[in-house]
Amino acid sequence: MTGWPVYGHEWAVERLKLALAHGRVRHAYLIVGPESVGKETLAQAFAMALNCTAEGERPCGICRSCKLIASHNHPDILYSELDAVTGALKIEEIRQVMQRLALKPYDARYRIAIFRDFDHARPQAQDALLKTLEEPAPQSMLILLAPSVESLLPTIISRSQVITLRSVALEAVQTALVEHYQAEPARADLLARLSGGRLGWAIRALHDPSMLEQRETALGLLDQVIGMTRGQRFEVAESLSKDKLALYPLLELWQTYWRDVLLLTQQPEREPVNRDRAAALGTLARGLTGDEALLALKATRQTLNNLALNMNLRLALEVMFLDYPGLVR
Image (cartoon, rainbow, N blue to C red; front, side, top):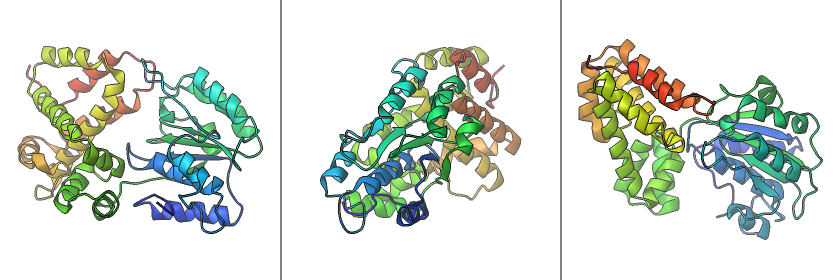
C-alpha cells in the first residue's frame, strides 16, 4: 500500500508531512488517544516516511525500508514490551531500549523507539527517559503512545510534541473496512458502529470473529454484575483481578457501555454505540439518574487509568463495583 496507511486522522498526517517538508521534525512525539484508535499505525507510518528510500512522495510503501517497518522487522525501529505477568512497562525494559536507541542507525536515516502503552510505566520508569529527552542522540527519535496524558509526568509531556487522536468518524471506519479490507458493506456497518470510532478494533474484529463473542461475554458479565449483591460483586472482583492484562480491553468496553447509558439518560432517542444491545441499554437508562450513570462511568475510567499503578487490583475492582448502580443489599 502506497502513501500513509492511516485512515480518519488526515489532519495528523498533514501535520507530520509539514514537519518533514520543512525540516522541523522533533526528537520526541507523544501520540495519545483511545485504545485501538490508530496510535501505533500513525507512529509506524511516520517511521516509514522518515526512512523511506523512494525519490518521490514518502512513504512509498514498496521500498525495502517501508516493507521492513510494516512487517516490524526493521533493525532501526525498536518496540518496547510490557511485562508478561504484571502488564507494566518496567524500568529495565525502558533502559534496554534507550541503550539501543543511543547507537547509530544501522540501515536507516533515523533510529526510532516506539513505546506502546507508555501509560503502563510508573513514574520512576518514566524518569529513565528524561536524559534521552534532554540530550537526544543524533538521528534518533522517541514516539510514545498512551490513551491520555493523565498518568504521565509533566516533564515527559513538556519535552514531547503531543498529537491527540480522536475517535474516527463512523463513515471513515466503514469506508476503510470496505475499500481497504474488502469487508461486506453490512458487516462493515455493524463493526463500524460497535467500534466506537476505533478503527484498529474494527479491523481486528473483521479478521477474528471470536472478538465479537468475547465482547458479548464481557457485556453479559456487566449485566449480571449490576444485579448482584455486594458479596457476589466482590467474588467477581477477585476472579477478574487474577488477569491484569485482560482487564484493559474489558474496562475499555465497559466504559463505552456506561457512556451509552449516560447519554441515554439524557437523550432516550439517541442510537447507542453498542447498538446491538439497545434494548438492554434503554431499560437500564430508564431506571437510573444521570448522576448514577456518570458515577459508574467515572469509576470505570478511574480504574482503567490506574491499572498501570502498583495497586491492589482486587480492592480497586471492589471499589469500582461499589459505585455501580443496582447493588442488591
